[in-house]
Length: 563
Image (cartoon, rainbow, N blue to C red; front, side, top):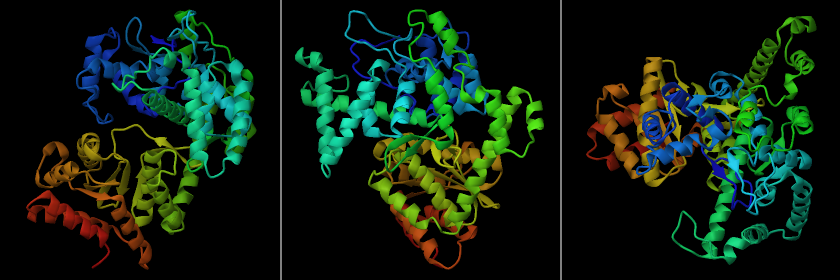
């Protein structure tokens, strides 16, 4: 049970970062541990089983496996009502639907709206100075609606202070004042933000600072400077998590370059309904049975599209069905039809995007986006890198290229999808290509990516029955990854479907490949793409070591269209 004691600001679950990543994990838990006690034994067994799955990068904490399991399950899955751990492990009604339903965004939205402080899962002592009384996601959504657009920094600096919904008007005024100050400090925004953030931390944690309780778990250093840096980092992490979870519901848009949230235009009626009907007060804070009856109920709270008249109106707008045909459908079928209609519209938008990309109409924007990613001028760097690489591969050649991303109703990337597959698939009819993209560097790149990359390639080979290769792209390629991929060229491993031809290139080399394809007066064909991988396999057999191989493969990539 989590405690709100000594908490001075809102916090949001950061594990997992993306909510859809929990789906295969809770499914694994339900399939293998239902009916068992959630204790140290099952926690260790779960994390060991999880570490063997293709959708999980890592092995858990080496010396504290049970803690790693609790980190994965006791946070978002339990707090949002997808799993019940008392008296035994079970997937709840909501959890089962989250795994199986097509309308996952709607399920997630309901659960976020019920998340509250305090609750039977998040207690606060009457003897402490904590005065939590809020449904965090609901009130942040209200702030976004009130302002129209709300920046990352505004949520971080002021939204996190709203530990009670009764503070809403006060937080609104603080943000208004902040916007005026920004105008005065034009050109010195970073200094202004840092000064305000330090002042907030010193004020909120005044009691701890005065009593000398400023040591943090992450460091042995005991200083006010380290304390402020740690709290500042926590604030960034919580705000990032808030953005990701709200974005994953599909009701808000994210401006990657503006680092802000706004209500999706077509979702404004939905949000207005939520803000006018969902109870702001936390409920059953001392009664876990009654609280979980609500939390585990997949039909609560009532949403705008639960109204049959609204469904009929939307179906009339999105489909060619007549009113009489729509009215004859059962309620749940109306929901399914609306979902399918929205998906069709989304695919139509994506198809038009692909057509524009293949005509090189997006070349400048793709290259500029790579610049923004390098300069960290976008909010979600991993998501934007994966999406932009998908666009680049689509432009590069004539294959059918599919991204393992979740897109919103308007074809804008919303989040990376659950794992156990490559980031991007390219079908060239005679052969296939997987593309893996990472922002990880150093030893972490090797630990997180090396084995999963080869496993994803093997999975693709098995599912398609085709010869396949892999392109591995990162800002900088780690030496251990180079050695690992080099050895896989030489080793015939049945588990990986034979030799694994994985070519690692850095982003600058990949960008040069794009520029080359843009400059020629024809569209590169699949044979020219394949030649890079055939060369890689050939040169691996002749090279004495991985450095020689990597150098020559990079040279080939830099001149991939040269005869």
